Length: 492
Image (cartoon, rainbow, N blue to C red; front, top):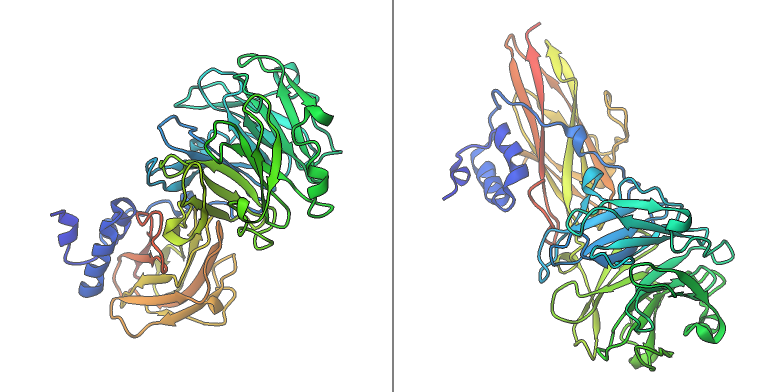
């Protein structure tokens, strides 16, 4: 048996170990509840500020693209946002059981990319060198080329400009909010592109070069297999067409689905051939996405891929409010039936982590102490159900909770105490707070408490510890559900 599971009391150091033990966290919590808490000695707290992240990372207009970015045999996701960032969600699960976790800093191969607003990426091996490159549509209608100058396993993306960008000179502000998708539309062995636009057009860029030396040329009129369709399908003056290519019906050619401003997913079946495509819109029961969207989640931006490794195409859909919807194919590769999955059945399900702040951290004699906990959602997916926050009790520092507080003395930010229920009596080891609301994707719900610490003529160290219990659905990761901070106290 793991020795940690036999720990008779829950010391501050054990709380910090919770960040690394994953599922053992639940068992240790039960032990803590049963046995109480003691002060931690010789404790060195982690750097809480290192866990902070910008809540604007996933602001709005999430535009995903699926691809095996790190060549480990499963699909990862690159996501463009309204403020021009490219986020990277690595599949830390498997090809059959995906779990998506956002990577930041140097772990995000797109971290240094600074795209214009409304970034919309599409992944594909544009230069046929065996790794995934990316093209990114922008609010101004231009297409940016990010070449992978690293390897398939360790990608490094470098923006190419001028003649090194095969889309140089293509796209303009007459067709804003460019949203591309890559695929071999004409069956000649190289990557072509279709690009959706804000005004409801589907543009076709044929690769008239080669697989290794692409040259893209916009095709119009009858040369564009989508040219005669889009103008009659505009949902509104701001249609925001966002396409994704894939063989939806398993007949060996590329079909297309298109997200729209009102959240509807359109289906264009290729009723021609892989070499000479003819696209026909399917409606009603012939559209496997017929019941999805329909104004519920605006600015639908889909991406097709076999996310669960069962041989057919599933879909993830980014939305205007930054959420990811997961539509699993419950049918087959030739007869798809899509069903929206939620909670732990959505591989983009949420990940909660507390960020604990105490002030002051050094005390001489009797002094007031501020304790603030920010519960952050890390994966860009809103939590479900009630979130429970446990704060370890210590007789030296009784904590008080003001249910109406929006600020706490000694803390520069705001708190949301009115969004929490407080229980300071039912458990001898913990203060228990339960949320009144869910926590939005990449959002923070904070709470503040205060108390009087009285060293009573002694000196030592006091550890304030907090842990989060997930809501009604399982989290993506319970290995980061705790945090702690230390107060050094001295007699006056």
